[in-house]
Image (tube, rainbow, N blue to C red; front, side, top):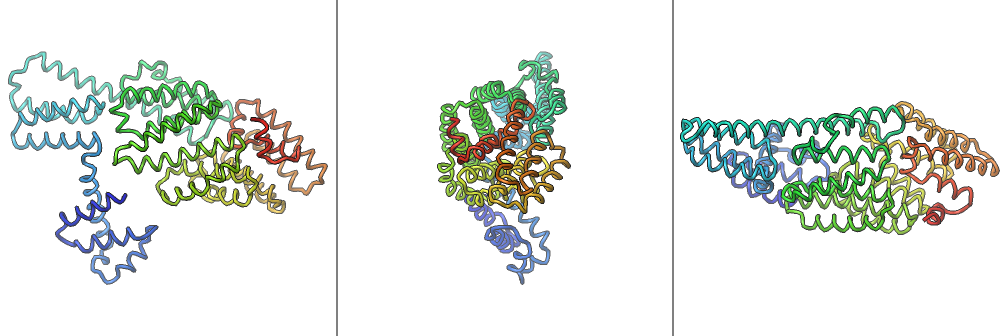
Length: 498
């Protein structure tokens, strides 16, 4: 809960609680005072109060009270809340036999529901419309009127079915994408193509509503990104953004989706080296966040913080301006602390990874390892995120730079076992692990140079393989190898290539 919601809860609780008022407020205040929820500390702090003896029931009452206060606080915050309230008003009018008032409410709500394409609530409104017509004995209605109502309802059901089908395709696609990561072999490509060849994805015309079109562009933008076709991904992402901009009333209700699309466009610009366009989109995003409705502002601030700093860090990494990127660390640390526990886990992980690479490029290997450990120690992300796998690889490089030769054999075996268990041992991983094995055998100076030269040749070959190329999006392995061969800093090699 934000500060406004907490303040409203206090007012709401004072007005609506007649029993156990002190207990609920004490429990709320105690929980609110803790940085992290700890039931033992709460019970110890409230020891002596009768309601602690039935702690589970007390928590349940407080939860219900909080939800009721949030419902009241946000009752005007979205069109969905407004339409649910209108539907309830229609029910109340109907129960009081005020059928004309019920119909007026339904007609008004239906107009709003159509404007914002809220088809599910439209079905609820149809229930009250038909009940009112029945109670009025269909007075003044003709066969034509009944057919109109039937056709209208059938059309809504058709749209909802269409949206549901696109949602299912979209969900299956992202379930596979989140599980497997980007494409690394033909078997993965065949799985993705099996979904993308669905009849509904043959043409945009098959998507008959805003929501269906939203999923259509989302799927194609992500599909082309996953197979490394960034130009086509960029094309569909722009269409995705344009779709939302053509429906400003819906976009205002779903700004978080629009920001996500814009950030995906920026990621594509980054991969397509459209640097000037990136700053244009960043400026646009930050402007939107500042104008966000009050009920969405904190959410937008959190999202924009994570997304935009990730982009800024990624740009500094690409240009080899690691010292410049390190200057952002205090701001990022402040944001991480301010929004602790509220940032999307995936975005937070990318922040940690980018900070790792920034510190690595700046020659601060111990600091890089500190940031990387935030990823490696989070067991909740290792199963699904490809980024975790490359964090394992980067961990080996950092320990190599730190001169921890005695640790390399153990870390290498652990990494090999992890990748093998998750079927993530592709050509790139095998090549790199073989290199680390050689480096952990305490080679002489001439052998070290030879191993780096051999690694460079193998990596340049892999870079030409479309299924292996994705590995180089996570870290500039070739520039790092070249820095070792030429006895230059990593940042110097990256900058020389720009």
